Length: 521
Ligand code: AMP
Ligand code: MG
Image 1: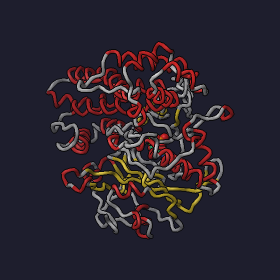
Image 2: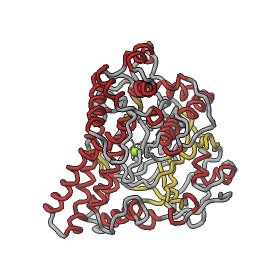
Image 3: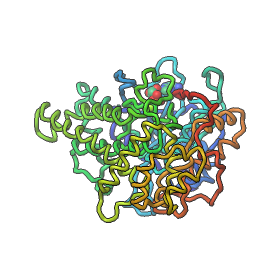
Image 4: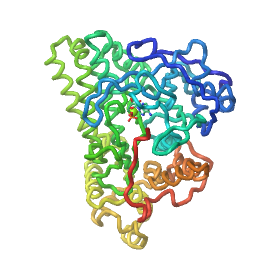
């Protein structure tokens, strides 16, 4: 465990200088560490005690980095609500460098992780009039929700720290300024590829350099899915597969990302950008929360289709290198990329079924794919959810209790609370129960404590008055989301058998009303 400044590499800055601009800090003389993710710090091999020192704080703010570090802001383009913007880029963010993380102490498993700041000041990519800053509320919100996602086992960028800058930022009212220290397996986005594609005239090599960098970063030989050098079509397919799995996980827990612009879609398959996101309290596909999404482009039920739209933009950007790889013409490259994109709907369907099968307590013993009856029950369940629009996690929790009882009819009617009325039809229940659903499997697949909108608001409201008790309690609850015991195999870190308040497991009370989120700028 390092008790001094960790070494950072500058792979991105060195490999792709045309895609970034040097960044230098504007020191915050009055900064204070507000929140530190100690488990993540340890996972990264950095002593959390050191991060709490003055030197640690200056490292986290990018003010005191190892001598050879080369912090940069990254350039990217992107479609925002369908409109192409050729130059977005980190308008208030910086990549300090990459940290070599050796999991289990083995150098073969070393993987670079980006150490990134958000809210760290203006950059060459800041638009006129924007301040390059962030307010503490939205940074705490990102910390809370991204760590909840991680605890549920959903791929995501992580949050290492929130630092109060000691300055105030002007939003509707003056608010305390903050910097979020974010950790990601990379910050390559669909928009990064759109940028490189757009620069083809001026920098003909850039697109290939970026694609090679992405292959090396995410698909080098020791990764789960090794790809050959220069397999750009393979890269497209892998990004499609990862994003299909990611959206499937979002749909299971009722996560509405809220701003699926192409600059917010990663190549790694990690969820990124927690601005306007929120969770469903009722399984209604037409739900969206973001104040700037006037047409509901990014509504819950549209997420798989929108992801495909975004991946089409990635495919378009990759065409020149696919053409080269296949030694074909544009038409040939379009045909090959189209074939990959056409696989996306089935990739998504399979990923969603694979998520819902254990969610309903079914194991697929021996054979890899679920039985046709398991599939049918999943499909019917989701169809029922779309119609009845209950809080699906409450239903799944009730079903786990039913799975344990031998007499389905008696327990279904005897449970008597309001959730019993939100159970699937009796005929479905009987067929489901016949397959002996595994309650323990259900409990470590279906989270119980997620960042419910009303709880997030309440906690952030109190935090804005300097009272962090509710925030800390909520953070503890949502980073321990499962009611299961012995969930080692799900990879979830078990907290110290904390007993959580039941309030964390339920949707908002009637009076909470419609919920609106803001982009958090
Ligand atoms: P987002 O909606 O967070 O994906 O951000 C879209 C773009 O706006 C990105 O290029 C951000 O860097 C930029 N941006 C957001 N907030 C600010 C801010 N306060 N100052 C400068 N740039 C910003
Ligand atoms: Mg963004």
